[in-house]
Amino acid sequence: MLQVVIIGSGNVAQHLIKAFANNANAKLVQAFARHPQDLEHLLPATAITSSYDTITEADIYIIAVKDDAIAHISSQLPFTGRLVVHTSGSSGLDQLDNKNRRGVFYPLQTFSKNKEIDFSVVPLCLEIEKEMDYQTLEDLAKGLSESIYNIDSEQRKALHVAAVFVNNFTNHMYAIGGEICSQNNIPFDILGPLIQETADKINTLTPKEAQTGPAIRHDGQTIQKHLDFLEKENHKELYTLITQSIQQTNE
Amino acid sequence: MLQVVIIGSGNVAQHLIKAFANNANAKLVQAFARHPQDLEHLLPATAITSSYDTITEADIYIIAVKDDAIAHISSQLPFTGRLVVHTSGSSGLDQLDNKNRRGVFYPLQTFSKNKEIDFSVVPLCLEIEKEMDYQTLEDLAKGLSESIYNIDSEQRKALHVAAVFVNNFTNHMYAIGGEICSQNNIPFDILGPLIQETADKINTLTPKEAQTGPAIRHDGQTIQKHLDFLEKENHKELYTLITQSIQQTNE
Image (cartoon, rainbow over all chains, first blue to last red; front, side, top):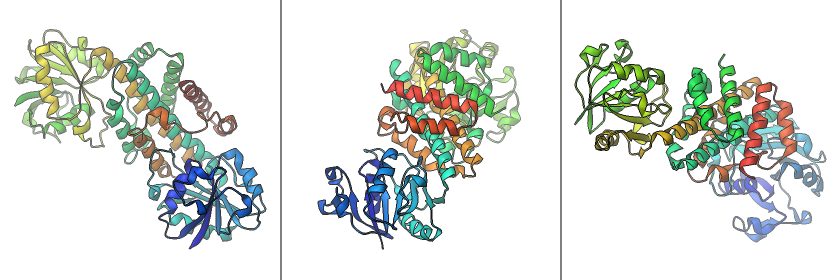
């Protein structure tokens, strides 16, 4: 069994801690958190530390903290030559202090506090500095998920941008849809099946094949009606720009 | 049993024809199509006509054609005083010729040729000119779906714009994500669980609660990294505008 220490107490750290409860290959031996009380609903107090001096020995240390804290925390670790990985999509391997063996363990998923995640289908993107450590990291990953990818720093950078589009920006499309509904006394729930089907289609069609609507039909009359309808300047601009982008993609 | 005639042979018409096979309240007695062969895989040739002269008598006529053909086709119908509805999200009731009793039967869903739809969860948005016809239209709808809404023309206009955001524009976010993946030799499949989870979250959180990522965190450093990474001018503009819109929504 691999011994694991998780450093951090945010969404990613908490979802990872929960996922490790059922890991056949690895055992969570300790969590490090500046505010131990953030994790007390998940772990016994004896398994949580807030002091670098008492960090226990382990095979892998997973730093799951804000991007801009990775460098500092990795430099504070009171040991060298051990395997230390971060979980960030947008940080290079070089954010980690090179006194330890470095790697990345990036779960490509959106984590919210009040929403459970089935970790077994979360794509885990692995990168490692020293070839000899790949097997260890993969063993750890295999205990958590069936979906494992070897992704280098350049690819991970691309993936993080792609993830912003399909997750954050998509969610903002839902937010605008919801705003339009609420302004017109329509329950947001009415959009639920459409949102679900839009996501489901991607399992059998490419986004290009799945595209429908006034933009791809070049239905200028409907596009104009929609622009006249929208009140917020920012929504009009978004509508215009995305419509143009759909039309360019399909030229 | 209500007798129904469907006019049209496109995606919506074909999905409706399939859905009527299991309708407990209504029976499809005929389909009208300019090119009967478009429907021959769904109906016996005797149930399809391409001539106005042979349109059969029915309780409801459903015009499921392109928006700009609704007015013409409804004016060509060789009868008066019957109940005629269209299925368009972006057309008013007044697109229908007033020689018949008018209504709207708008299924709020995205229909593609090669993707089956579970009609029982499709929200059906009903509007009727004469109060006396509402019950008939609702009976028809109840045989198809469990999700029925009384939506007037103004609300339907809003709903259609909202649907463009949560469906067409969301799908375009998937397309851009896919493009970025393919340029970096990453399989698009890796984004599948994230796309699915983004849609699932909406069942338990509002889009505002569900939002994560660099925009809402005002993480200027990551935003700049992403803008530097994007190559297409149009993608940079989209990234900037959507980021601003997320930040405005959450001010």
